[in-house]
Image (tube, rainbow, N blue to C red; front, side, top):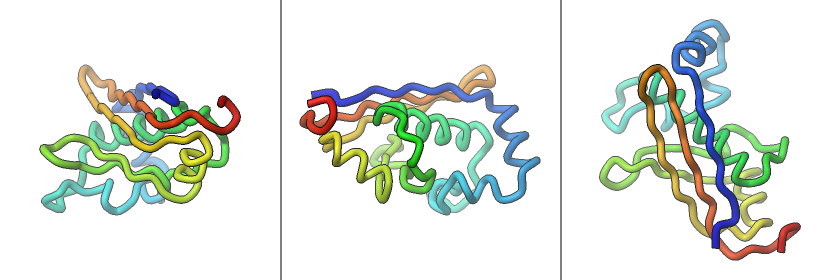
Length: 129
């Protein structure tokens, strides 16, 4: 059963400018694994913007509670280059409360816009059961 769906879009240039303008923002938003490609190279602004969109989409799929921590939703590269979501801490707690057992993530960027769609799947429980 689908527990929640989240979608978000991020203007790439504005997001990249924010990362440049605000010291420490990159480290506050992204884990070390998210900031680098599997080969160890730094990720592009497009790639980071898409990952940020995914984190926002995760929050929306969970009902947008305000107490989620950025590092508790980690978007990395999984099998065959597909995005993979790892949740822990505040995000894992909210997901468990709602009965989420699996995640589906899609990332895209084109025309200066990065986007993400997240589907939370599981057995409905908690406040919406």
